[in-house]
Amino acid sequence: MPELPEVESLRRSLIPYLVGHSIQSVEVKKPKLVTSKGTVRESSSISARGFEMELENETCRSIERRAKNLIFKFESGKILLVHLKMTGQLVFKSILNETVLGGHPIEASETTLPNKHSHVIFEMDNGTLYYNDVRMFGYLLWYQNEAEMNKAQHFEGLGVEPLGEQFTLDYFKKALRGKKSKLKAILLDQKIVVGLGNIYCDEVCFAARVRPYRTVANLTSGEIEKIFVAIINILGRAVKAGGSSVANYLMADGSRGNFAHEHMVYNRGGKECKVCGEILEKTVINSRTTVYCFNCQK
DNA sequence: GTACTTGTTGAACG
DNA sequence: TCGTTCAACAAGTA
Image 1 (spheres, rainbow, N blue to C red):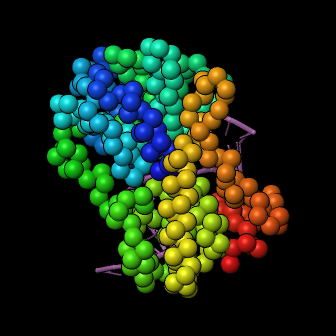
Image 2: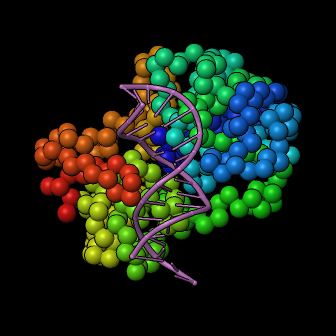
């Protein structure tokens, strides 16, 4: 599930292949993905055919990221925003047969391209970019320019970037002041800090040795600091490792940019804690599965 | 057939 | 009114 580290490492790996290169043609196989925004049905301002035409002959100038959104900016000023949601992935296959992948982990059965989940295909001057999405929760939005994107208020209310300069201990402490929620709810709340999803919330809580259901108001100053440091460390390390997804599934040595191997608690309920050996507890917080170690976390 | 998965958000809650 | 939590939704898998 792409959270901030997956999106960021995908962005970094796509830059050398896409920036400076142009789109020759676009094929939208599932119009829904470019005409709706998640569960919010918008009266689409653009048809699938319009989407294809608008991006033809556009040259990519930069690839940016805001929260879990990938933002492709073109020389003309046009913008393509991609949200992978749960199961989206972008795969670029160059004409030299190099493959770059990011987002949702690839399934072994889906290594052929395009496959049945390839819903939007960009023919570039140096290869092909596939947007694959098994459950089709993701979306690709097109904007005429920066102003139009801002007008859409897609980023309204988002908190600070955890790996940016604005995320300071002071900011974090102030943001938590007076909150009555459980720690996990706070970490999941994109209005405070963006980019943390279910996986990294559990990992951050474990790294900080704080139980996820603790009420924020009862946290000590030291604990908040540990959580703050854990957010930066975990996300930073995960980005470095290439996220929890397979980074390059066609590499000869089969190596994987894989933070998943480093997960301490996520998806490990009932298994032994890697630190103390106790059985990890599994519970539900804010309607999300949560795993923690009762022994290690206080 | 059913339970379960996550990011997001409008609805409902207290 | 407001902060907080819930539930629904997207579509597929086990």
